Length: 311
Image (tube, rainbow, N blue to C red):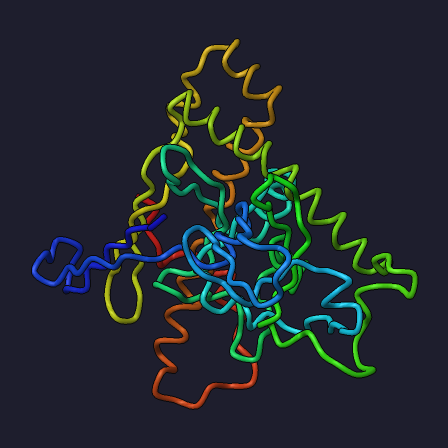
């Protein structure tokens, strides 16, 4: 899956001579959040296919290979720095919409629900250089790091660990994966339960996105960012078509309400107010590109909403 970002870098939004097309590859967390097909669960050194890409660091957790290993809890979010978007599930939209802009992205013939975290390719504006998270809500996708849930070739859910995360260690540091009897430790069991809930809610999320698409409530979301380097037009995102939503008949609104799609629609519309925060971070970083980075970012930009046009 790819998202198209059209950045018009000329003096005005109609300056087509300088209008390169940027193709933004969907970041790894999106891919990992969708079913992983593990080609070989028995071979420790085997490569695994993640939506067509080889990811050798993602390994199924097993007593055979991980009983003597330990893991560390992450202490920052630097592992998200390249994530322009992050997948969301409907269970978290009521909290995410309080801090993050929410959008829909096309995925084959369907749509996926995501948090918008940046306005440029491969750049997460919500994480600082030292790994601190700038926003008030952290997507559930990130909170199980370095663990993730995969689907095996025989359609079984498999708990995996990212051995390339730098959080798997030998010796006495960190926490064990398994107890002496061979069972998962309570901490790892809790993470597995968390990931299982996300996987279950992801199915509900897909159904809600399909229903919104069925009622023709998703429309292209043009975004014009007045950045320090000039106006940027961002394309490839979708939002709720509010006029179309308001025209629905009572029976259709009831069907959307009963499924949870109506709540998701309103959360997405309300979340768009947070786009100016991303714009202000982008401008701030562009202005400081040739200057020493201060220890603390001035967060007054969260109160400014004058630099973005919602189309």
